[in-house]
Amino acid sequence: MTAKQKQWARLAILVLLLIVAVVWKGQVYFSSWQGTVTQIVLPESGENGYVVVRDDKNRYFRVTLPKTQLTELREGDKLGKDRFTLGVKILEKAPPPSGPTIH
Image 1 (cartoon, rainbow, N blue to C red):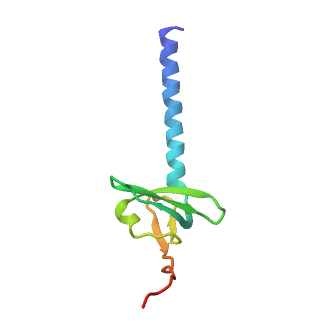
Image 2: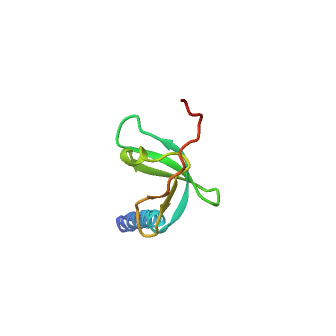
């Protein structure tokens, strides 16, 4: 393989990797969804944790959120992400758990 061919091969690989990165990020940016929080994972250390969200089609999403936002959530809350945004918002809070009351 000549030096010119090696240079073209490297350029082709770089362009392919760039296309893959753009498509992957585009899926995140252009998608919209709504779902119910099924699991909350608080970080032991650091600032970010994640929630697992299930949508109406029984697809599961792992959504990374800052620790401050995670503490406001509980299982059963409805979250949503609009198209062309990266932020997640709370659409509906779950009712408080109805356990036995102590008098």
